[in-house]
Image (tube, rainbow, N blue to C red; front, side):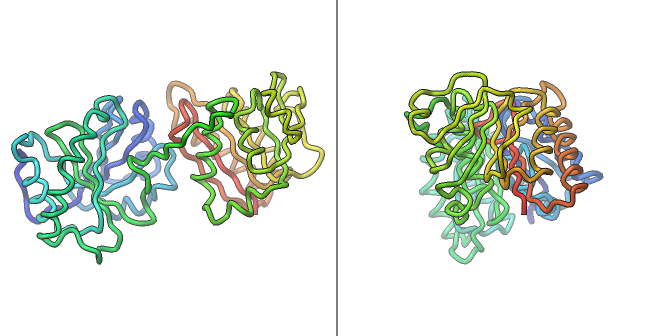
Length: 359
């Protein structure tokens, strides 16, 4: 069992990610934080990255300087204490409570999490078994209380005898367990890719804006539409859609009368007038997609855009950073006011999703 030091300092920054993207998240952090005194522990396939303060100082200022919503590859962002290891199966609770008390942390809720891996899924029952006794002890020790500013304690289990405690703050965290928004596949959608666009709306558009931004009667173009997974989402919102693809579209989708299917090259097609939405899930080089989207946005052919960038096998962060830099340069040169976000969503695979709103 790890020795406790009092007072304990939260000298680690714990970030969750998709397994296999640990080095990409670490590269993003290192690039964006520059000379920050951190070393990165990023085990391949682990599903998380630990950014550890080299000099033992608190990581809170660094964590606030790069908010979760501004990152590409992170799913969750926590200030964290050193991991508790070699916990006795007879008493996992006492060391956890002792570490929290030594840290001086207080919080309004707690959650039990594990990496998004097969081994992590096997740990799901552990949190359920420990939840009630831990909550009771935390209340008795004054750590779990209603006046704790909505802070949340995360117990991140990476093995049955190993847990790392992290603290999250409202406005700089994901509210979903494990940082994952799990959506149910609509049974009538033409393809599972439909979930990518639905998740993008949840991620990038506050629910209070859906009525305005996704209003029935809006117009949209779906480039690379076939068989219609993203078009289906647009039609469900009551939009009229230009589906641009040489491939066949879903027959039931076409029977709605809300889709005009044009067998044309999505990279060359231009709309007959200004549209509300451009969406694109074309499989091609990221640089080529960025060039096409830049043309749409600088010409103001749409107000909102959601598109995916298919990533190379290596240097994925560097490719994303370069592509977004080119897009920003184009929009800035055109004098356009915009909002841009890019995230590696749960329903993405070897790709990231970009959202742009012109203002």
